[in-house]
Length: 182
Ligand code: XMP
Ligand code: MG
Image (cartoon, rainbow, N blue to C red; front, side, top):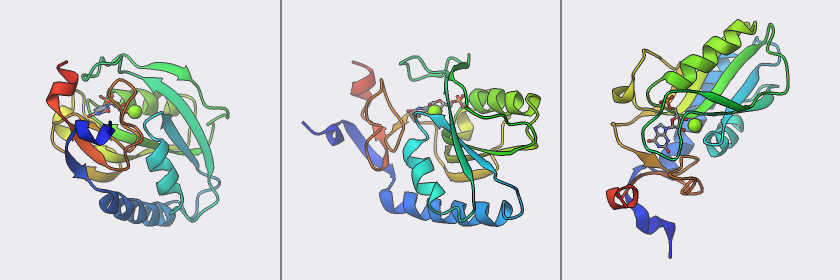
């Protein structure tokens, strides 16, 4: 049985994703050209496909780090309490940090992590996200680099999961409602 049967429709296609990665990579390359070893910090697990594709288009010497933070507990609404399951492996003191995220929804995850890294002494902290769902905001948060804005729908694929499934779909799609109403 194909996992594609659970997808109602494609929201962001593979072709669109590739164009987004090219555009954002070029912009980031320009903006970070005079920074010293900026850190691209991915938030696991959702960032993985996006960060891999985006980073190919960042033509600068960057370091790559990961944090595993979680605000979702197998549900489709964000609980808002952000837990750090795995921290990054290097000090952020005086460093320029670019956080790579799959989606900004309520804004709570990024708001928490940006404040934390700033508190730890980062020189700058910005966010690049594949998807922005502004209708989901609970607190104000504006990511600097946005791939595309999506409506208030639950999406999966290209890193985004429902109950840990669908991350390996190569595009972003809307799940059939019967899947999460089961
Ligand atoms: P907040 O609400 O803190 O959420 O901005 C960020 C995290 O919530 C998850 N999220 C989603 N995951 N489909 C998903 O698979 C969605 O539509 C969705 N909306 C939010 C995601 O893990 C993100 O990092
Ligand atoms: Mg995530």
